[in-house]
Length: 298
Image (cartoon, rainbow, N blue to C red; front, side):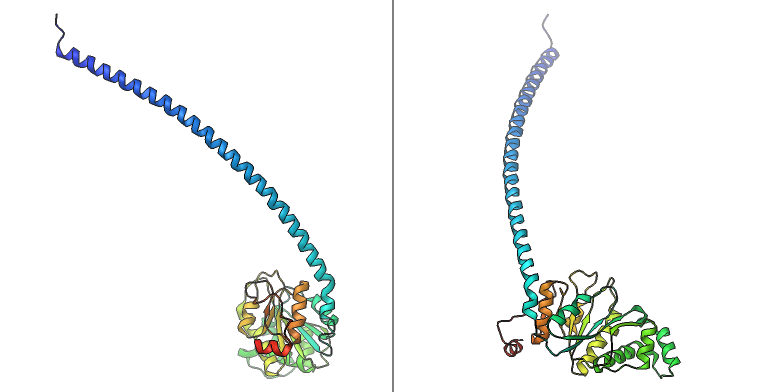
């Protein structure tokens, strides 16, 4: 009996199917072998790269350790010599320090000024009560002093700043102190030549800066007194950019030996913006030029 056409077709299909399966299995086995080889090659290269990076990391750690040691040596040198640099540069100058907020204290600045030969007549700290018009108004009412409520804060700051600069205390100043609106270490009994305004705060408050800090700066300029703005390296909110906009010199790292040196050199007659923050224009004042030459350069 002769097989029909259907049998031949099925047989041919079966043969080609078997060939296809065989080819697929062979390709899969070859591909698997290729992948294994590739994995081993990649693993070897990664291991080689890791060994290289590990060695490079050790070198960088050693370099960092050497740089830290060098930095410590520089810091020790600066800490032990900066007083010799600033000694006697501000002889005869009477200085007042005004801390416009009580978030950060600047007690070390006074010692630096004394090493430079200046006399710190008083240190004034302005508390948050200065922003309370009701408290201020009660004091004015008790002393029967006329005032405008809209300008009460700025007028009070003007009065305090003028009193500090001229060295003239008063009953109003005494009441402001008693009420805890300001705290004064020292006495307002002698005029001063220079105002140091210390900024920086925990939170941003541009209204306060304009009402208090700007008013102090404006009064100092009106009375033709030198004024400089200072700040510590680490503060939550920096005042330096605002001080720059008020056109006064600034030191943004006054709690470091370099910053203390910059403060004295700037006060000696080298205006500028010194420190390590983005707002700084130089690290320290240029001492190669004379003060007269430096002023012309600026």
